[in-house]
Picture (tube, rainbow, N blue to C red):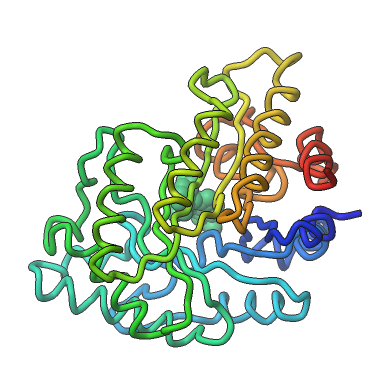
Length: 318
Ligand code: G3I
């Protein structure tokens, strides 16, 4: 039994973020990507720096190849991300100087992408990481030039380009109630009431295994509140890094965290997708950028399943 087969029986998409290079070059990665998962989130190749390296010159080649591969294996795709304050091409800081130029650039970027992938990608992380931990809006070039309106505008532009797409707001640290997630939910709910097409909220769920604030009950309460507010839910980028924990416990705690979030997702009807941020520990942003010994994923460096993988399977079975 694969994760994918088990999740299908639960009517759940089970996803991973996917990178172009290992998908082509690493046989183990390719095998796991195509057999264990029913959804792929494009990890980096759809970000603005990759998609529009020069103004107006869109580079669809790699994502087009990934789309084709996904179709061959009957895998659904999640477009990531249309609007973010990071992974921007250099020209943006020269060309985006005021509200008018910013709107022009953002609208073009969003609509070119959504239109190009109409029929092959119908779920998008439209806006990513717009809030700070204290509940204020994060300082980005989009906030500085357009103001808070850049968020509802982005959703409207995406909707214009594809009326059938599922449009998500995506963030980290928003999987429980706190200053950031409360500010986020209040603003998104108000916009939604005004008719802004925000279909769902993505909870990235990057977890540090040693973080004492983790609480399955609090996550469950929060998912229920988001569902009650009328949003679809996706766990979009889960990983559990081990760095500050004794090795003996670490793998058990990691497996437990993955299992808890899976259980919450399965118990929340609005939660239709559970995606992890990478397949194996050797192709992970945590290993590369956070802590080399973080080992945050379901498969080890050799592509062997870890305890967390078996825990997820057990949760899916019962
Ligand atoms: O592929 C190049 C390689 O050729 C080059 O030699 C190397 C030198 O810097 O860079 C490699 O590209 C890096 C890429 O990851 C692939 O590993 C980029 O520099 C690096 O910036 C990029 O980081 C990505 C990061 O977002 C920034 O875009 C991570 O892979 C990716 O996992 C991470 O994902 C984010 C989500 O999009 C949003 N939520 C948080 C999450 C984790 O930070």
